Structure formats: C-alpha cells, structure tokens
Length: 106
Picture 1 (cartoon, rainbow, N blue to C red):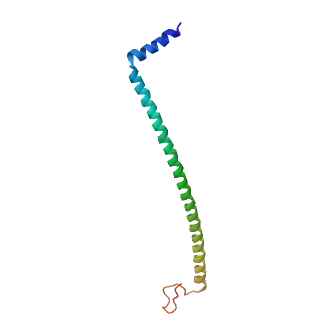
Picture 2 (picture 1 turned 60 degrees about the vertical axis):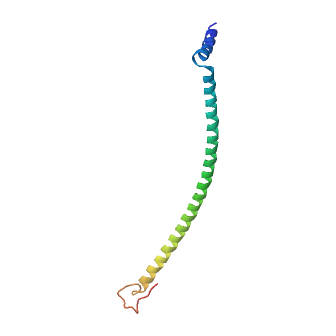
Picture 3 (picture 1 turned 180 degrees about the vertical axis):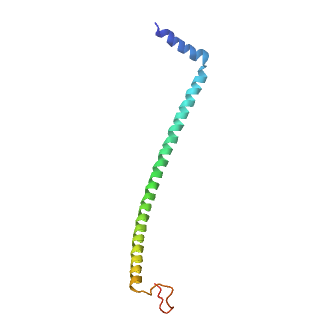
C-alpha cells in the first residue's frame, strides 16, 4: 500500500505542477541534443583519424630528413678532417700570409 501513494504522487506532479506539453518538449529537446551530439562526435572521430594519418606521414618525413641530415653531417666531418690533414701536411696551404702564387684554394 505504501507504493500506491508514491505512484499517485508522481502522476500528480507531472499532471498538476509540470504540464504535459512541457514534459514532451523537454524530452524532445533532450533527444534532439543527444542525436546531434552523436553525429558531432562521429565527425570528430573521422577528423581525428585523418589527423593521425597526416601526423604519421609527417613523422616519416621527419625521420627521413633526420637521417639525411646525419649522413650529410658525417660527410662534412670527414671532409673537414681530410682538409685538416692536408693543412697539416702542407705548411703553406690555406694561410693568408703566403704570397698569392703559393695560395691554393680548395
């Protein structure tokens, strides 16, 4: 018997205090909001997927460029080392105090 008054009280609140059109309007509004959120989240998921593909492609390019840069740096260090060796073997090579005929340009 204690359950009947609760059910009756709920029905009375909807009928007397909150008009039925307001309840229906509220439910329709909430439903429309949920549906629009579903489609917005779906579009967001697609955009994030495309962004991940773009970032992966960019990471691949950065890795390739870093490898090429390391190779060029290695080659430059080797060339600079060879130039130092040549300068140490030839005393007048590359100095500005030598006469113009004795100067050699690499």
